[in-house]
Length: 230
Image (cartoon, rainbow, N blue to C red; front, side, top):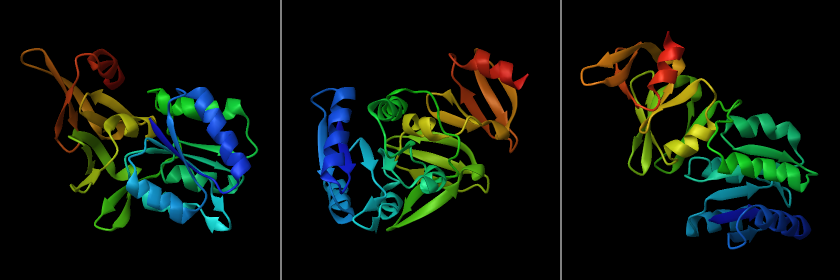
C-alpha cells in the first residue's frame, strides 16, 4: 500500500506518519510532501492508494490539490483545522475529515473507513470525473446507477448520458449515501430509480427501473433487495 501525506508542518507530518504506520502494516510505503506543487508532482509520478491532505499549506489552499485529484482512483482523508470547510470537502467526495488537533483514535477511525467495506457517505453531493484536462462535477442526485467497466466505472445519469469514473465500484460504495446499494458484483443502484423486483426464467433475478431499464441482481443479494421492494 502506498500512502501520500501532504502536510507543511514537519512535526505534524511525522506524527501522522507514525500513527499511520501504527495502524497499517509497518511495511506500508509513505510519501511526504510539504507543498501543493510537490504533492501534485508526486501524484503524477506514483500510483497511490490513500491521500492524507492538509488544507492550509504555507498559505496555499489544499483545495487546489483536492479539486485536481478528486476524480482519481485513490481515496482522500482531510486532516485540517479548517472545520468550516468540512461540508465542502465531503461534497467533493472525501472519505473523512479529521479536525486538528487530533489524536490517534480519531485518525484510526478515519483509517477504518478506508479499510472497511461499509458505506459511510452521508454528505457527498458530487462525483468528480475527468473530461479531457478538466474536472467535471456530476451531481449524486443525477445518477441512476453505476456499472463496473473494467478498470473504470460507468455513471449512468438520469438524462441518458454515461460518464466514466476512475474509482472502482468498491471505492465508490464507501463514498455514496445510503440511498445507493450494491445489488450485483457489477452494479450499484440508486433506490430512487427502482420500480419493482422480478424473477426471471432459470432462477435469475432483476430490478426494473422507472425508466424501463432492467438491472441484474446477484443471488447473494436478492432476499434483502426483494424485501426492500415489497
